[in-house]
Length: 514
Ligand code: XMP
Image (cartoon, rainbow, N blue to C red; front, side, top):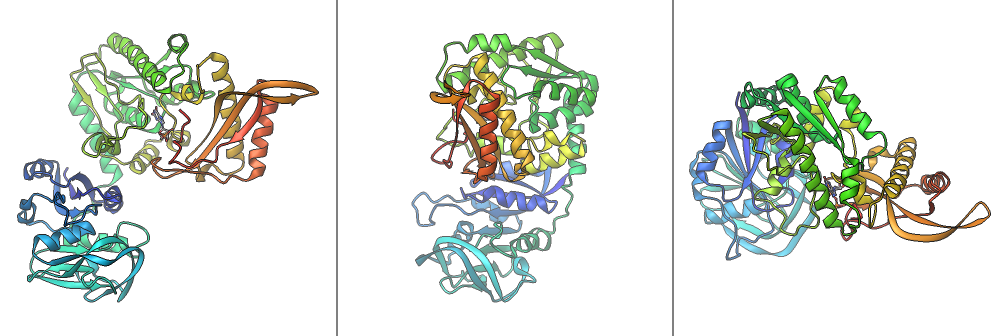
């Protein structure tokens, strides 16, 4: 079955993924592609889905820049509806010979736009609409074959359309919630203008993923690294539906898991009838990490050892296929949207470069966003502890012990982590936090325990609110809860004498300490 789809050409705007997600929320498939995607690639994508329209995203460039990003001109000849947003709007105006100028005043934030003609993308809207603007270049007049649909005080052409072809431009961002009727504008484009059929439904998607794994693996055997995180858990459940006991899931217990985590993963997946191999590799990992204090080195050693353990199991099972839980943002971020300034190496256990020769790597979740993965997880009956699990780094507690990793230190941070989790959950604060955890610093401090002077560790508590982990704010947790956490940690963990709260946003800090 082919899904109706809208392509989003990425001109570098920060809201690019949001456009894709808004479209998908309406049951229409959407894919983000580079702004200069070739017609050949578009044709190839057209074999997978019915491409019904194209959106040009916003972006930081000016149409006057010498190297202003432009699409392949041929996209205008495909006969598909096109919607330009912000930079995309200015670009269309410029390409067709409209008048674009740097604005007298930069418009940023909420603005009221007057809708002169409520047609097409603007169908059904009020005369005045509250929208979100963020631009400096402005379209002052439309090319001959276009007409103006809306204006603001500073922006005479805030929306336009071609008189004969389904080509539209909006100066504002309908994809952000601050544009009050933004969703209606997007729905108008995908349903009224592109005439899409809403067939991107999670029920269909699950069925398609299961079939895909069946087709790819045929009568062969496959293996997957299962961490207990949501992505690898969903990929495991999908692959098991397709392959039954021809799938082996491998859970490597490196010794840096949170309390009861290995048991939880084992019980959950055994209950789902999945063929699971748990490898207790704790001694190997502790041995390899002896004397290592540098965070990047730690990650590298853990990543490499993980692969060795995984390879050993893979070789024994005789699997020819590797299943991975790579999701859509992983694929985009490591592809054309790669961040050039790598801050930390993320050892993602799902991203295994392995020296074992597999016939093929199968990635059933490669087209899904995180919120879609959550929906699929619920549909597959995965427990809510997995569906709503807070992100946890692949190297686990090893990157939450500053300095050398020892069994004693891992034990301390594990106990502190349990206390933090229990108190946050008891306090009903869990849902507003992205992550909440303890870090064992390598600082020692003086304290008093009982009547005696004590000298022990300092534990730091980190709790953040975030949407996608690219930025985060430290959480303003009630002091009462912090007090409870601090009291319990110092009472229940004899080696700890002091608890501090991390009040740094990201940036400048990162979420994890290492
Ligand atoms: P930072 O610390 O870079 O973290 O702000 C952003 C998000 O990524 C998680 N994280 C990791 N995940 N392997 C992972 O799989 C890692 O090495 C790793 N380091 C950080 C972190 O928990 C946060 O959600």
